[in-house]
Image (cartoon, rainbow, N blue to C red; front, side, top):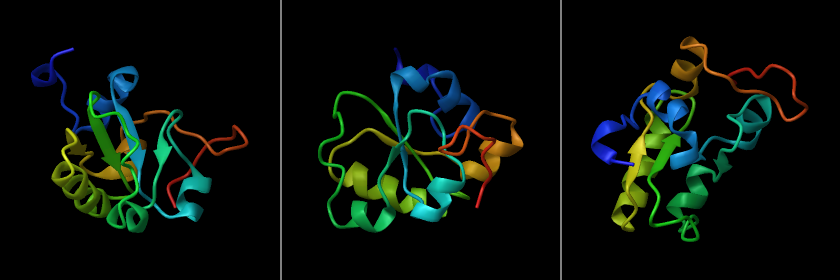
Length: 114
C-alpha cells in the first residue's frame, strides 16, 4: 500500500481501504450508538486528548472521523503529535452518509448520523 495513492481525507478513500487503515471514531457515545462504520474503533475526543489511543498500530495509517470533521481534526492533530500517521476524514459521518457509504446501528439496523 502506498500512502500517496490513498486519499484518507475523503470518506470514499477511507471506505475503499478500510482493511488498510485504522478508522477511529471520536464521537460521543450517543452518536456512536446511532450509527457507526463496521470495524471502526471508538475513542472519544476527550479520551484522545487525555492520551488514549497509545495502543493503536503505529505501522498502519489512521483515519479519524466525527460527525462533521471538526472534532476529528483536533483528534488527528493530537495523534500526529504522538507520532501516528493520522488523517482527518473531511465532512465526517455527514459526508459518509451523503456519499451513500454503509454504516449501521449496533443492532444491525440502518444507522443514522446523530
